[in-house]
Amino acid sequence: SIPLGFFGGIGAASRRGILVKGGNYLEALAKVDTMVFDKTGTLTTGVFEVTGIAPRPGFTGQELLYYAACAESYSTHPLARSILSKYGQNPDPDRMDSHEEIPGRGVRARVDGKQVLCGNRSLLKDHQIDADDVPVSGTSLYVAVDGIYAGRIDLGDALKPDARSAIERLRALGIQNTVLLTGDTEVTARDVAKRLGIGRVHAQLLPQDKVTVLERIMEEKQGANPVAFVGDGINDAAVISRADIGIAMGGIGSDAAIEAADIVIMNDEVGKLGDAVTIARKTRRIVY
Ligand code: ADP
Ligand code: MG
Image 1 (cartoon, protein in one colour):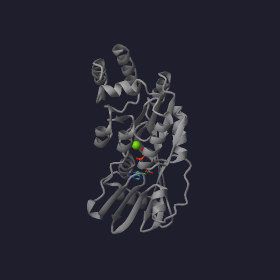
Image 2 (cartoon, rainbow, N blue to C red):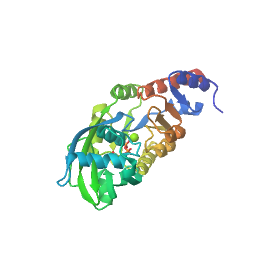
Image 3 (cartoon, helix red, strand yellow):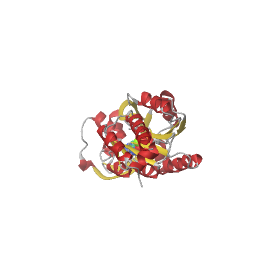
Image 4 (cartoon, rainbow, N blue to C red):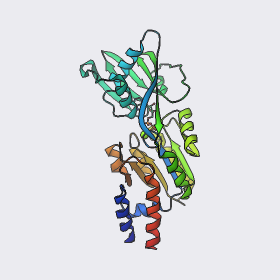
């Protein structure tokens, strides 16, 4: 049974915008020394800005953006929203007759009767299209039209303003092991980890790879301390439910993630993680 004091902790947490779904999660959180983070939307704002458009011969920049915007028009992914805001209008739905989202890869759609792919290099590779184009840094979307590589759109998103101080505070609270998991490229992941002081990075992961990596980290702990995973929910409801403590950022997070999570940070502030740990520890002292 759960010591009564933990219910007081749940109240204190909720007053700070932290929803805890059971006293056992506070008890576990008090013992956490490893926190695993998703990147996009969790440590970064998830609001991307287009920094460059590089069409291939035969395509204009405007055409490239048009195909990308049409293909992305049904996606709720942060990258899709940024492409649509750069395009500046809602593409005519009559121009599309199918749309499919491939998690961790991108989208496949029919636009003006042509097959359009918009996503990372792996998406194009899966369709035997070589995008032999390596950007310097940041996140890039590769676009193919009817099997032909049409060009690249470069995007970047900023770190959340409180991300660095949040990680520092967690370290001060004894959470020494921080890990970054992302579907984004190695270069971008390393850059973010370095700027935040995160020790370990696993990049280019599909949503199901994130579960495998998390399981490996949990095995390394050999049950000594619980492992927390923090995600924004886009593509990571499965990891959130697999973690000893699944934490969802509720601000822009998906309903599936909020459902799967044990703890929900009701806004987007990563700084609330330190608050949650502090409340968990204080509650523990009162209980025992
Ligand atoms: P993260 O792990 O950083 O939160 P995701 O798992 O959501 O990222 O996505 C990983 C990668 O998959 C993205 O960096 C992008 O390359 C590609 N991707 C996913 N969804 C889309 C989409 N709707 N359009 C284009 N690319 C996408
Ligand atoms: Mg994410």
